[in-house]
Image 1 (tube, one colour):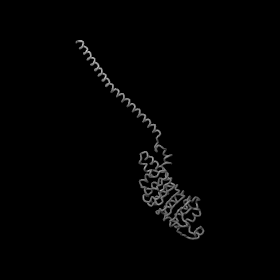
Image 2 (cartoon, helix red, strand yellow):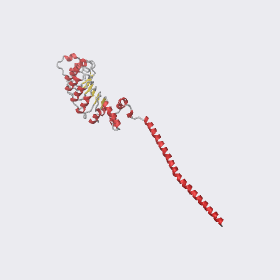
Image 3 (cartoon, helix red, strand yellow):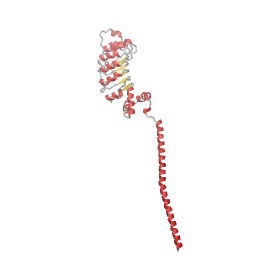
Image 4 (cartoon, helix red, strand yellow):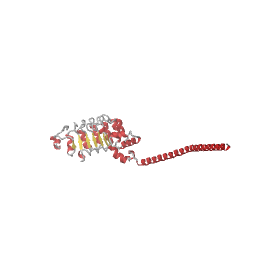
Amino acid sequence: MGNKMDCHSSASHDQNSNAETKINSQQKLKEKEPEQENDENIKHTEEHVNTCETDENKEEEGDEYRLSLLDLPWEDVLFRHILPSLPLQTQFLMRGVSHGFLDLITEYFTNAKSVNICRVAFRMTPPAFKILTKNNFSLQSLVLRNAKDWISNDLLTPVLSRSKKLQKLDLTNCLSVGNPCIQVAAVNCHNLKVLLLRECHWISKEAITVIALHCKELEQLDITGCWEVNDEAVILLAMQCKKILAEYCQTLKALQVRECRDVTEASLARLRLKNVKIDVRPPPNMRNLAKLSGIAGAQLNVQI
């Protein structure tokens, strides 16, 4: 009986030992699981960091080969070949893209040698014109054709005052400017070769006199529709502008005087002898200077 109880007691003890061993094993497993999870998390974190570093390196490598428009040489490439081919509206829109593009367009406008607004003359505004011409001392050509209403003496005079390199000025059909602008251009723009004043009814003979006295390099003059210009002004041009008119030079190219009511064949005949291209035909009975010189005080209106 005692032996049975010992056996039973021993078996119970073994079972308890096995249970304790199992519990201890489970506890150890539970203790190891967080460690394994931590190890796995650390491993994943390291892999993620390495992946991010790899992506960043790839982006940096890609950035080395990625160029924007602003990275091109401004003066040699953008100013000479790209920006001149863009419409003026596009150039103004580029100013709003970023500070970099604002600086680019501002510098382009400041150094531009030519300004031509004839295609957008009806949409141009005084503030836009100021932006376009501000601080520009390099202008050689200024075309303001058909700027009828918005251009003014106050707006144009400062531009002409600083454009000492100007060679071409086109004020065709500009109705809101006057003689003061012509006087400023004549006095400051000594290299002026082409002056187009078609339909500028406001131009006076005094303004033409100033041109004759100061613009000695002038080669082409269009005064079509300038009603106040007369023979006296044209003769003065013939005497003073040695590269455009009359006896002093052989390089005369063209003179347009259609609708100049007071310009007559008396002042034009001597120009025709120099093969000057004039936009009105001589009267049939006045084709040679001998006949013309035989008529005292001839006053023939050449408007046709």
